Image (cartoon, rainbow, N blue to C red; front, side, top):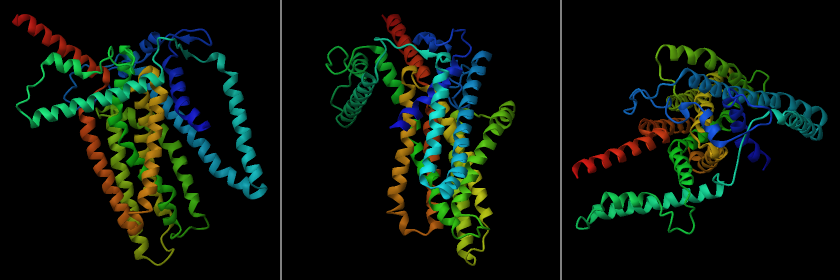
Length: 430
């Protein structure tokens, strides 16, 4: 319960402090919702997330220097946030087992408890310096937006079924454009369950608009978590050189602490300066490809272990696959947090980040189910190859969706422009 309250909110709240830092406000200020949205970079509404190969890239995705700086600040916040997470993980992995071994479980639980109390005191001591978004009765509530999401899904399913019926029964007259537009959204005036506020439907549509991207994450998490299970068991059959199999898990947080600043300060600027596309959707796709490469490296190592005498292959041969997975994690997870925050409705950031984190739980559940059923019957090397192929398929499907995906605000603007063009055309015909 505590983690569920912290994880979705802390990243969104921290990013808000960065996004609003350019506004001259007194301490403990409550920011109006419209003023908050106006402070966000244009990329939130429009655009730098579109692939350069996208058909919709018509030059409108240029950012002002102020917007670009603010977007970079938000990206740097999420990088720093992720580094802090791994500092905590590395400290926990290295210190708590020693305390438990010397002083028992009571002391091992007491130390993180004291640290958490200390963190809470620091957080509360600075509360007057935080900037908060103003909430009022007109702002859509979570329950109303979720209800609108379900109503939109139901309406779209009905419309899809009706279009299929028209396709199979060609004698049925096609609906007019006015009838189609009337059916596109639920009837807000006639429905007793759904509020009529159009802002609620705007936020609900934005939430649903992000789902096609987030739904590709469970496969990544299902395969990523093999570091703590299959790879640890693989390490038991390697030459450990006095180490324990679990101790190689230190490599992951240490390398993240090294590679994140390296990517943020050197690699990304270098690639951007030379015209490479490093927008979030492209980075996600690249991370999926690296995940597949990491799993293939694990399969090759497993083949070498099976072909060699017991415990003759060095533990160091696991480091390449871990390193590749670390880079994939940076491209997918850190970028996913940044992307989810940037594209979420201002009133729904915590929900979107919670949904993003929920994809981790879905991936864990899928992994547990598959590895106790289907994969338990396979050779480990074969299993890793199957996992790599699964990631490649996931990447190709993601690539297809990402090439067509546009920010909600751009799609909304295009729809409005199309409607305006049709109305002008009808007026000219009359």
